[in-house]
Image 1 (cartoon, helix red, strand yellow):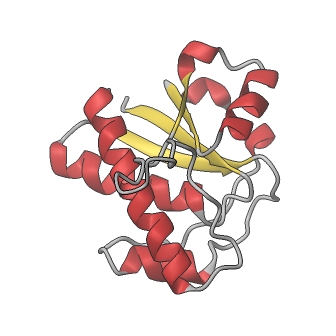
Image 2 (cartoon, helix red, strand yellow):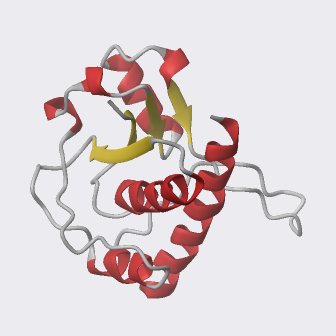
Length: 152
């Protein structure tokens, strides 16, 4: 059986689905034998990914057109080797559900090297933003997922 990881954000319509697709694209290219899925801490199962998330992912060759959201408490947590939060708040929620800290990582964007006050942080939610906000989010996730893959 293939190892699985779970990306977790708030609504499971933007960040975690984009992270799921990007991870799966890079994992397949590298032949890692790991597959990613995603879920949200504040959603209902069965919703579509946001239009701009679908569009931003399509621009890099990914497909979110058939994606459907999943509510984290409805997911069988025993299926996953690693849980990847898109923010510290999501990690806290997973800890409160009994997921051990050793199985949780927070996806962090790289700091802006041109801004000495920019510190590493979780991926900012693009919900409600225009396509350019989603592209920036996608690119931050891409860089962060590349770092994640290098560390596992």
